[in-house]
Image (cartoon, rainbow, N blue to C red; front, top):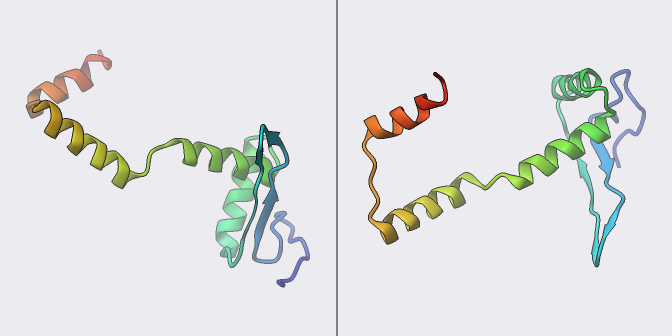
Length: 105
């Protein structure tokens, strides 16, 4: 096991550790430990957590939940390719940019 002394920024001796405690139906929460986090990374995460008014654990939990909600890039591209193959849909660059810019006016 690594050194478990807390550094001034709240990071556990080169590790970021947090536990997510709740139960949702039959699914138990997972505890995750990330080892060998560079000091600068730990300091930056702790600073972001402080600016958000959260503990490092709360901040990282929220970030992981948000990360898991977003599709993986490879999965997203596969879905786009599949939809494009099924529908034969094609949009010109001009059409895409027009739709993108419509909300910016």
